[in-house]
Image 1: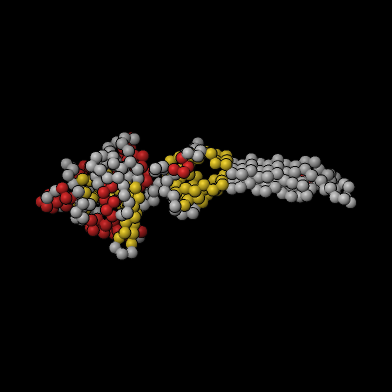
Image 2 (image 1 turned 90 degrees about the vertical axis):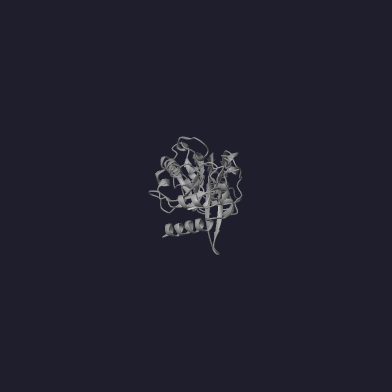
Amino acid sequence: MFIDYTEIEIHAGNGGKGAIAFRREKYVPKGGPSGGNGGKGGDVIIRAHHNLSTLLDLKHKKVFKAGNGEPGGTSLKDGKNGKNILIKVPIGTIVRDFETKKIICDLDKDLREYLIASGGKGGRGNSNFATPTNQAPRIAEPGMPGDKKKIIFELKLIADVGLVGFPNAGKSTLISKISAARPKIADYPFTTLEPNLGIVRYKEFNSFTVADIPGIIEGAHLGKGLGHKFLRHIERTKIILFLIEITSDDYIQDYNILLSELRNYSQTLADKTKILALSKADLVDETKLKKLSSKKIKNLDHHVIIFSSITGTGMESLLDTLWKALQKEKG
C-alpha cells in the first residue's frame, strides 16, 4: 500500500540523574565524594533511505521513544547514555511541525539525515560540587528531559517527468510501455488510485524517471476527484507532460483546464516546462492526424506530440522530446 502522509510523536530520552556517593576504602574512613554523572538521553534521528518507497511502516506506529540515560554510579562511574533511535523514511520525505505546519527538514537525498529531537543532558554527580569549604557535598543534579514533539511526514516523489491528464487519458498505459512500472490498467476512469514511478531507459546508457498520478478533473484544486491528493508528487519534477486523448472534442480547451488546475494548486508547478502529447493515435485516421499536428498552442514549450502506446506510433519522438527537454533543464 502506498502511504504518503502520516503523523507521529517523538520522544528523545531523558538524562540520567547524578549520583550521591562517597569513597569507602579500607584506610580512608572519611573518603571524598565519588558520585558519577548521569548518562545523556538518546536522540531521535530521521534518515532517508533508497530502499523505501512509502511511509507505510510509520502509519501504524504513532510514538517513537529513544532510551533514557542511566543514573550515575559510585566510584566516579558515569551512567550509560540512552540508546538513539533511527527512523528511516523514503527519499523525498518532508518533515513538518504538527502545530505550525512549517517545514523542519527536506530529506531529498539518499542517507541524508536530521537530528529531530535531542536527548536530555545527564545530571552531575556530587563529585562535581566539592569545594574547599564543602568537601562532602550531598547534592547532585537530576537529568534533563529530552525533547518531545509531534511531527508530520509528507512524501513527495522525486522524478524528472510528471504525467498529468484527465482520468483514462492513457497515462498508466504509457508508463507501462516505456518503463518497468506495472500500474493497474483498465478502460474506465480512476484506474490509477496512487502514484506510480517508472525508470525509462533512453537509448543505450541513459535513463530518466517518470511519475504518474491519478487523473485530474476540473475543480481538483478544490478537492474534487483523486488527483488533488497527489499533486505534491509532481512538484519536484523538471517537466510536466500533459496527456490528452486524441478523440477529445477540444484538446486545447482540455489542456487549458489542466493547466488552470495546476496553477490554482501551485504557480511553481504551472511554471515548469510543459509538453503536450495526444494519446491513443491508433483511434483516428491519417487525415485527422495531419490536421491535429498542424495546430499551435500559445505558451506551450514544445510542439504537440501525437503517439499511440498500443502501436508504438510517435513513441520515439515522444522520448526524444522528453530527453532533449531534460538536458535543456540541466543546462
